[in-house]
Length: 107
Image (cartoon, rainbow, N blue to C red; front, side, top):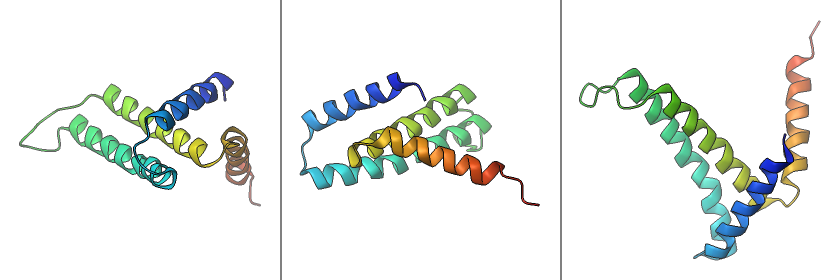
């Protein structure tokens, strides 16, 4: 993953830390919970892209869904970095492990 992404995550974490209104443990918990909030926004965008709510109709585009998915990813990265200073290394190792497990043929 591009190191610039993790540099931006670092900047966002520093900004959130500077603006924090709660004790550090509570801030961390709220950042982790924010991932669920963002995932709910993905669900709402998908429902809106399908026009599934007859009262509202088509309220979102697939580009909106993409943007909401990006918000989930970025929010999770911020939460991970807020919890672990080695977030980039942890994430890279996790992706490598999942890739190996998933793509290794079972024969």
